[in-house]
Amino acid sequence: MKAIIEAALAKSMNYIQYRNLVSTFLAEGKATGPEQSEALVHYSSLNDTRMKRLDKTMVVTEAHTEKILGLEWEYIWLVLTEGWCGDAAQIVPILNKMAAIGDKIDLKIVLRDENEALMNLFLTNGGKSIPKLILLDAATLDVLADWGPRPAGAQQLIQEYKEKFGVIDDTLKTELQLWYHHDKGVSTQNEVLELLS
Image (cartoon, rainbow, N blue to C red; front, top):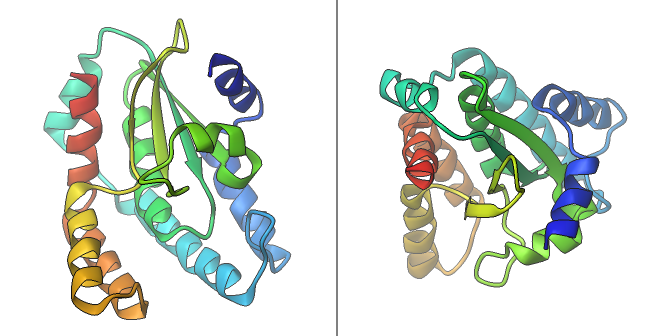
């Protein structure tokens, strides 16, 4: 496992590099990842807009800021993502804002489809769901925990919708984005910081 993590870290990006990569692909009419379609490019474009908005408006709460500033150990937050993922567009900017507080968290980002061996170590119910946050001890690269692909409240929304209607459709995707908008990143902050306690 450690060799796989080290290989991923060697080709990881910081948040600004990730945002620039997504924008560069979009300028070429492409999405990240090997699969290309009009739909994936469309979702990538929507997500680029969402991330720009969140980069400007997302706020880490005062309580969460205090917890981050009080961290004793140094961590690497390794995130598996892709530019077309709607959940990632809502979560990765929050993780970036959290990591930027103090000097105890180093955020590293890798693309899911370029890191299949790593993704296969952190499946969700057998699937390659993203974003996936892997919390590492910065000194040893030991895996302390993992989190994702979305907060519990968002996951519950999806499960209830699938039970009722049997599908994931555009209506659900809209409801999910509204859930994220109303939550303002607080659930993600709560759940991720709980892993560090």
